[in-house]
Length: 186
Image 1 (cartoon, helix red, strand yellow):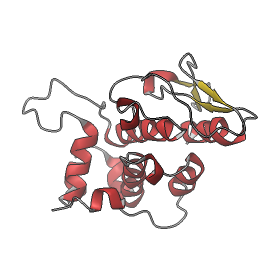
Image 2: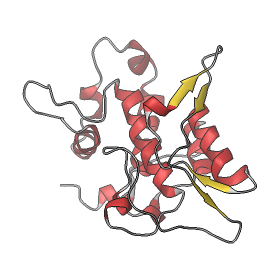
Image 3: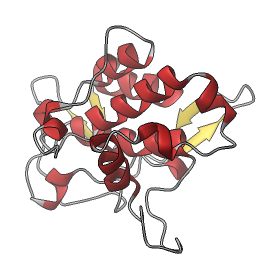
Image 4: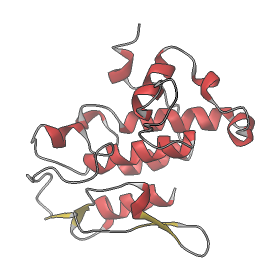
């Protein structure tokens, strides 16, 4: 929750809105109480009060970059929401966003693998047998995965704000599969 709350602060509570542009595990530090703190603002963009988006060259780390970066479209705070979704799924599944050493080459890209499993109704099958925390609180695990998928919606307009992400993670309301992924279900 520390990362999500930190992004709420950057996106909605700072006098000048800040887009971090490089949310990834390596840019999250833990303090003495294991509270997550966002670090490395070297790629960050500042937006003035009347500004909602900015044009910039693609920046960030592959695998965490929102699709709009690759289309040279103007970027908004929703690029950070996308990156947060990737990090959230990495935390939920205890896997990196890309694993090149997997034996069968199945599930090499985490986000594609999760979407595939959710669409096939196999979410319960992909929890590691020894992940007692996920098994003990399956509903919270499922909610976390669905929130991650909402953050990964291909269209930035469909992604929730980070304030909404925090509310969803805290259990406010039902969190179903995003329409963007339902439309392609078999």
